[in-house]
Structures are given as C-alpha cells and as structure tokens.
Length: 369
Image (cartoon, rainbow, N blue to C red; front, side):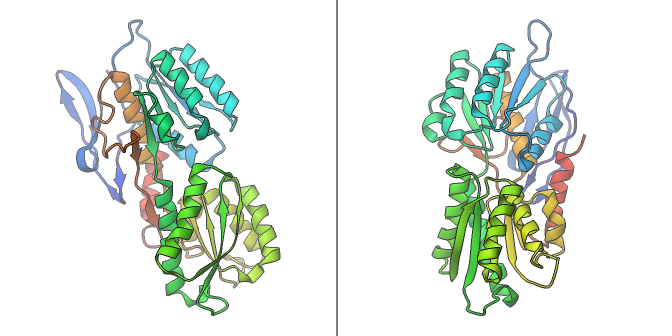
C-alpha cells in the first residue's frame, strides 16, 4: 500500500486548492485535488523481488537556490513505497552523465534529470533510450529535436520568456507610478540586466523578453549594460560593483535573470546607500521569488519578483515520473497540457507587495516535512 508523505496542494495563479482522500477497488489510494482536474497518485506496481522501485533524480547543482525547493517538493510529495535516489552533479556535465550510467545500473525505473547543460542532453537521452527507461527532464529544457528523439521523454518547467516579459511589465508599471525612480527626470528608464550563464537558454530568453517587451509597449527605456552573473550571487555582486563605479546613480532599474543574482546586486548597492542602507532610490525586479527576497518585497525595498512555483513543478515532476513507472498515460491526473515538444509549463506568478502571501504559502508546502 502506497503512503503519501504529506497531503499535497496545488497553487495555480495564487489559488490554493483543498486536498481530498478517496478509496478505490478495495485498496486505499490517496488523491489530491488540484485546479481543473487534479493530480492522482495511486499505489505503485511492486517489483517481483519486493523492493521499492527506484526513481532516480539527477540535480545539476545542489547549491542552486531555486532547485533546492524543487528537490524538497519532490521528496515531500513522493510516496513511501517509491525510493527516490537523488544525486548532485555539482554543475559538472561529465559527472552527470556518469551518474546516469550508475542510476541505470542500479535498476532505476524512471530518471528525472535537471540537466547541467541542456544543449548536451542527447547523450543522456540516448542512454535512457537504450535502456528503455522513461525520462523526465525538468527546470532546464533540452532542444525540441532532442526531446522528440525519444517517445518516453518529457519536460516539466516554466516558460523563461514569460518570466522576462512579466518582469519587464512589473518594472514598467513601477517606473510609471513612482516618480522617484526617474532620478534624472528625463522620462526614460535607465536600466541594467544581469544575465545568467552565457548562452544558457533561460538567460537568453529572459534577457530578450525584457528588451522586446519594452520595445513592443513603446516604453522609453535605455539599456546601460548587460553582463553575465552566471546565476550566482557572488558573481552578480562583482558585476554590480563594476557598474556602481562606472554608472553610479545613473542606474534607475536593475533586472536580473534570477533572485540569486538579485541578492548579489542588492548587496553591492547597499554599500552606496541603496535598498534600505540609505535614502537613495533604485528599482529592482528579480525572478523566482525566493524566500530571501520576500521581506524586501513586503517592505517595499524592492519592487517584486516573478515566482517560479517550485511546489507545482516538483509535484508535476513526481506525478509524471510515477505515471511512467506505472505504465500509465504520463499526464493522467495532472493539471495542464503538454506542448508540441512534450513539455508541461508551470505558470509564473508575479509577486509584489500585495500578494507576498502567495509565495509564503507555496514555500510552506515545499518545506513541510
């Protein structure tokens, strides 16, 4: 009999749904109601030797802030009769490929892979395909060509372009409604963008979405510079240190491809009297709505962040992996629809001072034990 570690809830566009329990065919099954359909986790097929079936979860880097919450969500919703084996590639592509081999040799029934390098996913796909093991990529999406090369391969994540678009819209609205951000009074928003890893698909999409949204809306904005912060706090602080020396008070808005880099930028700017360390004003919008920035949003130290729903993402990853393990239709009981590259996109939620509770509620579920 499968046991669910915790009752699950789905947060869609900031609305929490209530979980329910149901029995079926004489065996106890735990069902969790979710928006527009619900996710159902039923009892897994037993291995002939009586051991728990293994779902292997490969993480690109345990040090990544956001992925930590996805990891927690997976383990929170996973049933006790399924063994989750999770490994850290430490941002090393070669190491991750070796871990895939080891997981296959251990007899894993499904692989869930957060790719170190999504452009090199073909090697992982070929190994899973040769072993006839279902494969669920998440958080970092391979190319459509790679995804379509194997019929038992799916993806769960967000649409990075959407996050950049929402981020730009949040920055525009704040700049229009708060004259203090227009420090030089020219009616033009002077801004900088700190990108993620150079060439990373999410970094490219989010940065392009920022600029294209401003242009499409006819919004007066001047990009002072864009540099890579490699999705890391320390690297972002170094970038911002240089910019503060070069541009200083000319910078009116900071956009970062994720919140880890936003934290680095804020740390740098605090030394110059910004973000609560003095009276100077600068706008800032991140992506992920990590717990570390929620107090700053609530206290209006920064404008906001675009929430990646780690709980929904983790629950969908596990749900699809479990369905594949059971030999069911992979989307059975899961909210949403697959795209043309077999991808499930979890919606983003803009988080500002008026709806910080949406993010806090989501993290309460991710961190529950």
